[in-house]
Length: 310
Length: 310
Image (tube, rainbow over all chains, first blue to last red; front, side):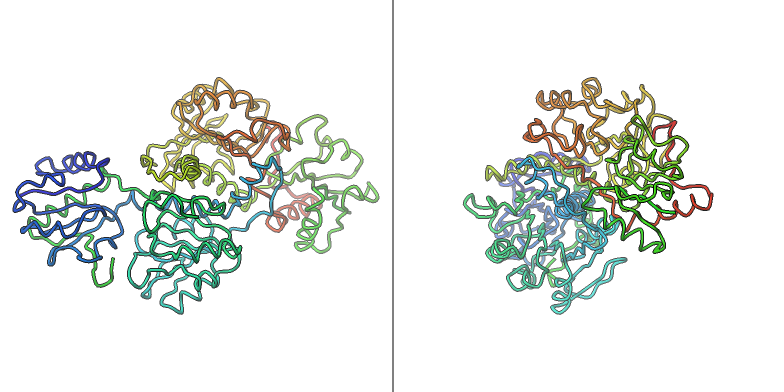
């Protein structure tokens, strides 16, 4: 029985080596050289893989998505019916995201954009000191990534709020849920951080209406999916000065087209979907664990909940 | 008995209000309107105050320096003989410094300068993921500020080393001391953070020799005093590529002259001595506490150790 591996050409060999380091007996086939389709029992795929193609493998009994988000799997045609799908819950992935969120929260909180502009003008001027205890951070999503970011921000002294679709509790985080809860949280949020899964309910959650609910001068940070943000609405809010600045790692489409206004906007920080990168050595053990579990008919870990959409 | 207050014009009234909020009975005189010199029992001064001027007050029994560093007091002529000197140890000051250090460590660690350059070129390209567990941070100084920065960096997963003049221990921090220890730590430091007091022994500690000991591509962060860095040596190391980038909050002299090469250097981030700003409301209680203690002849808190130089 064999494992089909399908990811970007640049990282294919690193993934193969990392999986073999955990279990040297694995028979790994690099897409599109799958060999006999009837031998493929598991597929380990990144977002670019065509779900229709997976229907070629009659004995497929596991699909592993090589990231935290699975929205790409849920678009038609979706994974082959009856094949369980797992995603990654990886400490390194979470750590990388926490660092990226902290970097951008601290950049905005500590007036770094203003100080960079002052440096360009050779201007020596101390700005009023910001008060961490009064800089309220609102996090959309309190899953693996949102929860870890919330804890790290709390540890630095920021008051942290979190919004989820369904009611949820987290130590030290003021929790909101549902449509009413979203409005209530936004009205008090100085720095908004989006770490939601992309589902039909969360698509476009950062739009003209929700941006208008934020206090004037608020900041927007998005490391979830481009589809969470209505780009024209965010640009309008930035240009009116209602939103002070934004840090964006994800876009729709990606790569961000070269003529998109985000690239040259003085109050937008563009990242190339690099806020957190899956590192093969770190993620390989849980992938191999699921391959073994699928082979032996044991319960899988990190399964995607298709009803919830993540 | 009265208190002489002497600081920048912009913050004089805020300090007066903060001190009166703690003890409304205080008789606060704003420099240079001290009134009868014989009535001044305590002086609360920022760095610009002339120490010779303090010799006008025959009954002075307490000098409070409005910051963490006291190097300005130790230059000739120094404070009036026999007058005890206290400095600030303030949680808000420490918190602000920790934020600033984290912001700049994360900026360098997460390749932010490269990603900003890529944005300017509208280039969508993921760089190799950095490994936090292998990014060794070396901190010069493990006092109030260095110790807090070390703890915050450890919590994020960075391996942290610390150097002090005399032997010192701190949980989870690999500690070095003395001249040999300094060389040993520098040889393994990817990001160097200076939070030392400025004393004759630490002046110029970041120089051509110590920079050469750092691995190629290391980063330098200085939030202590401008006198810790030999500016020409750092510029040479940046221009040769041996040092990848620097974040500097402090300079000699300040303000940094408009024609200084740091301002326009693409790999130098200049801050106007704003890494951490003393907030009057936060610092006032310990100042008033020392005024009361001095008046009642009780032991003072946060006294400067003149033998150690901080």
